[in-house]
Length: 185
Image (cartoon, rainbow, N blue to C red; front, side, top):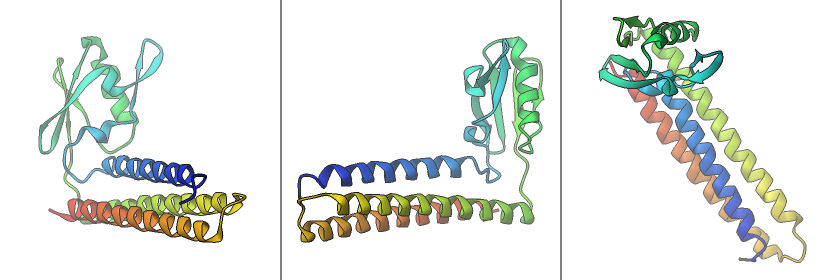
């Protein structure tokens, strides 16, 4: 393979891996009725006038299969943490006992499970589109190279297509696992 093509393909592979990692993070945020600290990611707590990520003002841990526990680093942060979770509007009702905050994860009904599966499918489709866009951009960059043989360009396109197929199949596997996790009662 031509030396001018290798860095372009490596960049494409890196971008595809980042897309996969991002998709994995998006799936983790879709709660499946089980307690997982990722459910609370993205929640900002008002801390001395500045919004701070929840995990920087308290320790988030899993108490049991259906309960998260938040141990604030400062006792006076219990109210703001509780308020931030409620205002995040993710369907969770935190409870505090003055020292810690417990967040029970409600069981999912059938309709909510279907909505979550649909959300997961939408996220997977977005990830696949991103992978295909990376393939398209990479192929265009390779075609624009000057002084490269047509055979090298065809080989590069085949390699990019194999990478694309691999990443899309990995997305499908991750989606299938998430669907099973959501629909499992």
